[in-house]
Image (tube, rainbow, N blue to C red; front, side):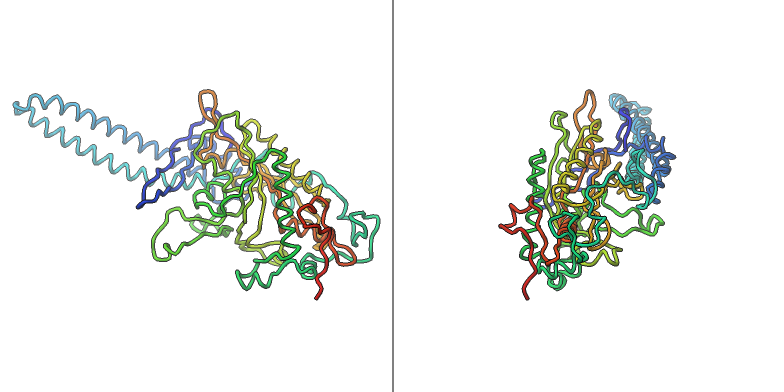
Length: 494
C-alpha cells in the first residue's frame, strides 16, 4: 500500500534468532503494517479489495483489533505505573521498618505490587493473542491498485500494443517469418511438433515424477540453455546482475512476497487452492515440528527480493536490479483442459526473472524500463506478441500494477501468456523489512518483478511460429550462438 510519509509502522520488529542445538534457526518474519492507516481508511481498503475479487480482507476488523490492542497497552502502562509507584514507596518505607505502621503499609504495598504484576502478566497473554490476530487480518489486505487499472476479470484486459502480424496468418510461411510467402500447410500444435522433433519426453517425465513433468532432450535441451543464455546475456548488458538462486525458501518468505491463497475455509470463503509446494523433510515425518517450513519457489522473484530482508539500503545504490535463474515449481491446482497438453502448463520449469528494488518515487519509471526490456527481447526473437494492462481481478496480492505479454501461438490458434511485469510498491518490502535511508526517517523500498524467459511458454511460441512445411523448426538467429551450430530443429528419424 502507498502510505503517507508520516505513517508509522507499529509492531515492526522481527522475531529473534534462537539456537537449537548447534544450529541457528530464524523464526517467522514479522511484517511492518500501519494499523492506524488501515483503521482510518477501512472503507477505501475494503472497496479496493472487493474490486480485486478478494473477499477475505477485513480492514474494519483490523481497526477493531488495533483499538483493542491499544487499550490493552494503555492498561499495561497504568499497571506498570502503579507497580513503579508501589516499588518507590516500599523503598522509602524500608528505611523506617521499626514503626508498626510502616510494616502494615509495607504489606499493603506488596499486595498492590503483586496485583499489578499479575495484571501485567494476564494482559501480556491477551496482547500476544490480539497481536497475532491483528497480523493475520492485516496480511489478508491486498496492495492498493493503480488508478489506470481496468476493473473486472481477464476479459477486461486492455491491449496496449501489438507487435508482428503472424496472428493474421493461417498457413506456415515458407521463408523465415516472411508472411508474404505462404505454404498450404496449416500450423501444428507444439505437442505434435515436439513428438516429431524428438526434443521432449513427457512419458519419461510422468514415469519418474508424475504428470506434467518432462525431459528436454537433444535439441530441446540446447534450446532451453540457449534461451537462458540469451536472457542472461541481454539482462547483464542492461545492468541486471546475474544470480542463480535457491530453489527453496522459508514459508514466511514465500508469504511475505504475496504467494498465498486468496481465501480459506477458515475465513468462510470457498478457498483458492495454493500453487505452492511445501517441503517435508524426513525429520518432520517423524513428528518434529518446524514453525517455518521450506517451500519450493514458484519463481526466482521470491529469493531475489528476500535477499535484502531486514536491510536498510543507501539511496545511491538504487535502483538495484538483478536477474535470477531458478527452477520454478507450481502445483497448478485447478488447471484443466487444453492448457495441460504438452509443455504449456507444467509443475516444474526453468525461468529467468528480473527484480528491481527502487526508490518509491521512481518505481513507475522502473516498471516501464522492465517492460521495454521484455518487448525488445521478444521482438528480437521475431515473435508476434501483444502487451496487456491487466485488470483488477488478475492482480496478485502484491501487485499494484501489472502488465502481461502474450505471444501468438499459431498451432494453438490463440494468444498465450509468456511473461508479466508488476510494480508491487512497498507491499513486499513492508513484510520483509527492506528500507532505504531518508532524511530523518527510512522509507520502504518499492519492489518490481518481470519475467525475462519462462522457457516452456517461450519454447511453445517459438516452435509453433517458426515451423516450416518440411517439418523443420527454424531457430531464431539470436539463439544460434548457443545451439552448437544448429540453425533449425529437424524431425527425428525413426
